[in-house]
Length: 221
Image (cartoon, rainbow, N blue to C red; front, top):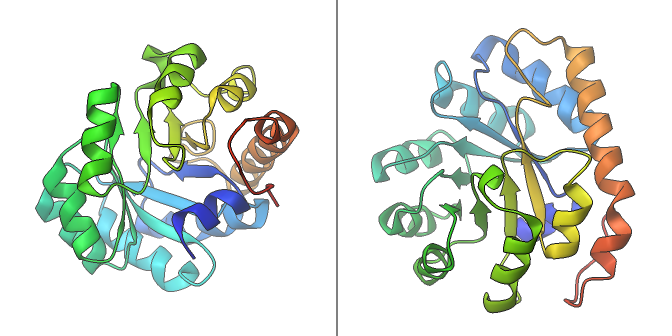
């Protein structure tokens, strides 16, 4: 499936910062059972490449697995070698984008300005990560959406919650990255599953605003 297909299924990216290889499979099960099928392991987690490999081996046929906090070409290469398909960065590095695409992966770099976003798309990015979202408002996202190509996907990361998710969707967001609201080291499987179910429910409750957007989109399932 394409990145757009995964977003159409459920446009939430689970960010498992701090997850360990010992806990990652159980965590993956909890998230997937709740309906989330895009999972990233930030590279500043313990033994991240092992966790990515475990997730890709266990869930690669039903979920999009990858890494976050990817800063260099070498790291992107290791993510793909470990079985990850998604490379997410907090910054926009054209060489990381191009290397990821050359290796057959999906690239989602972090951008905060139209200049960064257009440069990322020119390098081949599959989506734009608006980060940190605490620094922007839905009005800013709406302004960026007005000038970006209509097919460009915008993923909002940082400070997303039930109170602003619908406003970001109305502004033109295509998905969200959710971190500590879903996962923290030591959180129980049942708590992770419950948190994931809540985030999925919030997203689905906000779904009508997405349908009203003037771009052509597929309904969430």
